[in-house]
Image (cartoon, rainbow, N blue to C red; front, side, top):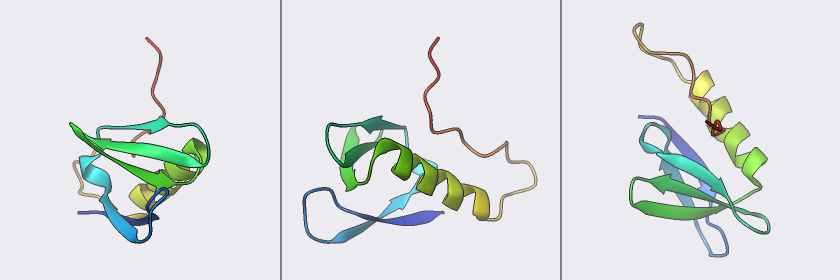
Length: 79
């Protein structure tokens, strides 16, 4: 399990995000970004680019299993 500490968007306190459980990340107006875990979402402080860079950096820095794929690309690709 890879946990990344984040500041809650617009609320007091911190939260730990399990990088392996993230479904997708979405930009919101202002200095916040939504992180989705299937049907549940949390809002964290930071722009979309800042949050994605933080999630990617922490995911890439963590040790990976020998059979794991390349680090996740958090930017959604248009079909």
